[in-house]
Length: 256
Image (cartoon, rainbow, N blue to C red; front, side, top):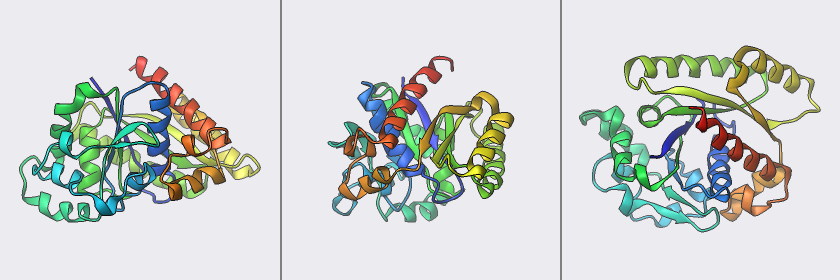
């Protein structure tokens, strides 16, 4: 039975998609069976996994609206060796169309039931907003991975996200919990980064992942080649960090 995790943060530009794609590839390198669900209409995780969103005949949009099932929509990332539930611009329309549907917050959760035994991990890349799409991700998940930069504004956004997770836990998904905070784009030369990192460790304790993802040019370059960073340049510091993070995730779920 797959463990389902959302990669979420209401703040944009914090490395959610980079984390989702590279964690998927890192777990695949550790011989885990992985499905990456792209819940962002921009389709960046789809493209980053090497799948052309412009040529899709069906996407996660059809799955959410009950027009198709995951088995017929999923694609395989040749560069990352994991499966992808792809997204494109059509997904933006799902927000409006799902309003009328029954059980609208749990459409994704219901869809995952048919493939839960096919995977060890299902990762959901959420859009940077608290929308019906994000809500579907949170209702489907066992836990949330929060990537965040070690800067002042990130702390402000974090408190909003934690409150959202508490509300979803109380009203819609009692299984939902924060799995951990992942420090990304970390620059040890900046005093502020170190101070915020220490604050996180003090306040959240073992909820902060030990792995720290450094600021790394190779990770930023990889999506333009349609490859996860861990396969684009496996020797880079960013790739090594995400593989270490995958190993830490495998260990962490053993205690769940």
